[in-house]
Each structure stands twice: as structure tokens, then as C-alpha cells.
Length: 232
Image (cartoon, rainbow, N blue to C red; front, top):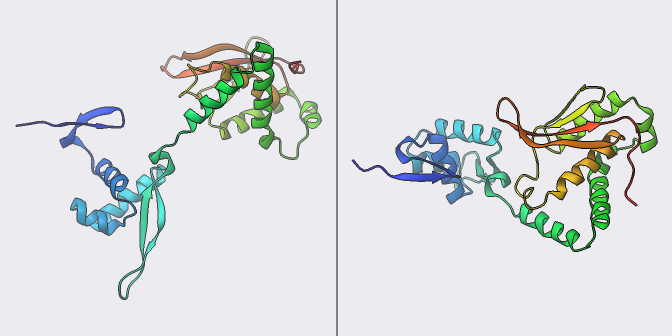
């Protein structure tokens, strides 16, 4: 008996062990837009089963609606599906890397730090809403950290904070720039400025992509009471 090995994403697996949902996703990627009826006919499953798997894939952000197909005669329109933007992928990491290379071309470290600070302020700005910096500063550090965590999690950092030896520490459980962080470590510098802008307190990184007891990588910043200094 011959066994064929395929690659799904970056993980190899036995073709015979491929799940129905994996086969559906691959078929959607290759033949979109399509309906549950199209899947039912192509993959030899019931239409109800195809709709069930499509609903789960949509829930997980892997497929998305793509309009409707009108019937040739009487009847109801059929929902069309296509791969989500997440599944199709993009070139945002290459674009970000190219822009950061332009920042590096500015030369000396002070100019680069100023650019990272300006970038952090720009990222933090949508989160300020109608609350001014002065109003933020009047809040307690606990309130500012709680608010900062909420905004950071909107930016996909999986953040949390905890009290730690006289100064709270802010823990980032996910690096949104993991695809380019090794080539551009200055993004950690930007993160420090971002935390300072959100918490209105100095932030000092003490751990970078360190594994915890569960093997999850995280970064840690100490947050101290006071006002962050802007680069000159």
C-alpha cells in the first residue's frame, strides 16, 4: 500500500488522515466562490454536512460570505463562500519591513528612537478617543494600566498586568510583529514607547520573547510611576 504525504500549511500529514474540514478549506481556496451544494457534489457529502463545516470555518475566520448565487428558475438564492483575508494571506510583513528599513536610513540612533516614538504615538492615538493626555495622567496608575491592557488587546498583544516587587509589570503574551521582529528588534523600542503613551508612565523592558512554564513566549515591561520622557 502506498502512502502519500501532503503538506497543509507548514505541517506534514498523511493524506488519508486529512479531515473533512481540511478538504473543504482546500477546495474553497481552489474553487471559490462556491456554495454548500457545490461542496456537497464535489466532495461527496450531504449538503447539510457541507453547511455545518462552512459555518465552523466561518466562525474560525477561515472562510467568509461572498454574496449569493441566484437560481436559474424558481427558488431561493444560495449563499456563496470564499477564503477569508486571513486564509488568503497578505504582504503586510514585507511592507512593514520595507518601511522600517527606510526609518533605519535616517542614520543615527537618536533619529531612529524619535521615529519609533512618533510611530508609537500614531498607533496609540486611535485608542485615546476623547480622553486627553492630561485626563489620563489624573487617573491612578492602576486605572491607566487597566485601560492600556484593553487597548493593547485590541492590537492583538494578549496583554495583562500584575503587581511585582514595588512596580507593576505589563506582560505581552503575543508579538503582533513576530514575522519581522528578528530582523527589526527596534520594534521592541516602539513597544516601550507605545506602553508609555498608553499608561502615561515610564516602561522598561526586562524580558524579550521568554518562555514561561507552559512554553508560551512573552515579553515583560516594568511600569514605573512618573511621566515618560520624549526623545529630544
